Image 1 (cartoon, rainbow, N blue to C red):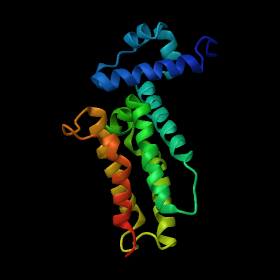
Image 2 (image 1 turned 120 degrees about the vertical axis):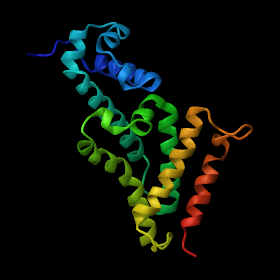
Image 3 (image 1 turned 135 degrees about the vertical axis):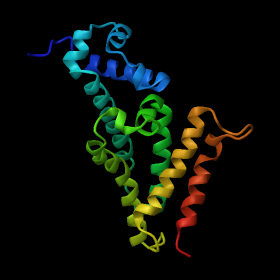
Image 4 (image 1 turned 60 degrees about the vertical axis):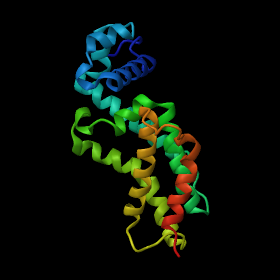
Length: 198
């Protein structure tokens, strides 16, 4: 059956954004297609037409969050200074999270299994992770980073640091009197310096 013209990409995005907000506030179990349709001022028929069912909606939600995240990292240009590229990827990570806290939560604060088959999502995780691994690997080849550990391990430490700080910031769990926003970039510089050769 052909999709109605009113069941277009704009409506799809509106439903995904509303679904992300619900998941962020109350978890995937609170997501009701009927309530989602009412919140978006459309019909349940539109939701089924666009996503098939709740599982299809959740899978689409995860894929959209991943697509936007990958696009944000891809917008960071590759330069002749891989160590600085790692820092700029960390800055892009935080920018994405602050601009899209609901989608960030879908990607990194919820279990991927809630959004479909974890094995199917593994390629999306690697696609999100790969730009950072590539930057570290270029830094190793350029003699900027230690080669005592695999690039994936160095990249994971950078990702974990960014994730930890951003998650604390988004959840409002910053220690009193300390601002992650004020120290985030300096922390990334210190981390990158720690992985440098010599």
